[in-house]
Image 1 (spheres, rainbow, N blue to C red):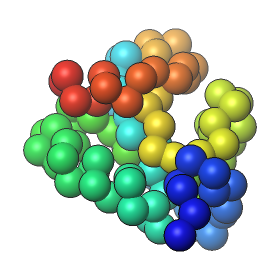
Image 2: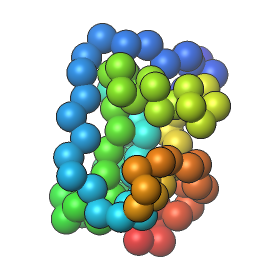
Image 3: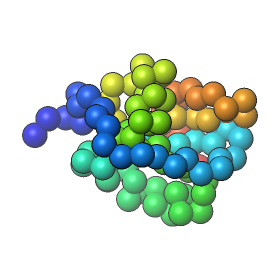
Image 4: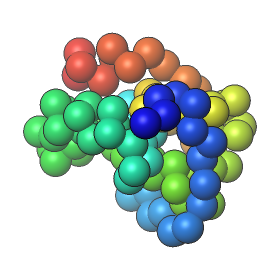
Length: 97
């Protein structure tokens, strides 16, 4: 089974990123990624409370964000800044929220 960091992101769905808080941390994931599922389960409460957002890398918008940040694999941590731009962050930051 290939490691998820080496899987190129493909598209087959659309994404609806909800209204996000300024400087919100987001998990970039893919539905077929086992590592993403493990991490998502670990931070499930933070996702449900809205403290951490989700970007689905299998969508057009997710792919565009990934390309703009040079992301070639998931899971990854993204920070949406107040000005609407994105930057990469360390996955450990998702666990500190």
